[in-house]
Length: 261
Image (cartoon, rainbow, N blue to C red; front, side, top):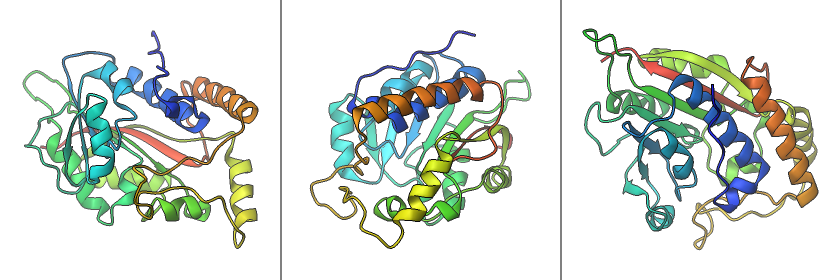
């Protein structure tokens, strides 16, 4: 199978965390969806359209976000973007073939309604042709014990385990095709850093929840050499994830299929 190349268009594409996540997302979508231009793709919590150029490999992308600040940037970048809430999507039933819920559900107090809305807007399976239901791709932060200042400035409501996320998806009419942790290799270092920083001063990062001028949460700067090393580590992890699921990580990724109407 030919792998979809990762485009380097935005500054976020150069940051090791974004780059690793994007490469994993592309690997999952290549395997369980496949590139194509005829699908309708919904990016829930699209922000400033940081993922649009990647998701366009898989169809025509529409975005939705509840924050008007990044939406202005998203429209400048050419995304058809609407203001709306993840738990009350401004779209009709079964409008989309693929829904991307990328580091979004953890922000919403009512997670059940988010999953229900994603199920509602995805097309259902066709029993006549045998066509399967639409696909939902989810990424989210993992493990409550990794709670840190980053969760606070992002106004996260929770972090997930793979088992907990899989149960939620099944509860809302999805069949999980694959689920794994990611950021496996950096997990020990990240966990140690979080513990060491507790109770101490942490880097001040801009957040739209607390800073009037910010349109998205600022990523913690990484020195160029370290960024290059972690980017390489991320590429190795993606190669591993193409073959096996990972037992731990700072994040979790799942792809699921709608099985109920």
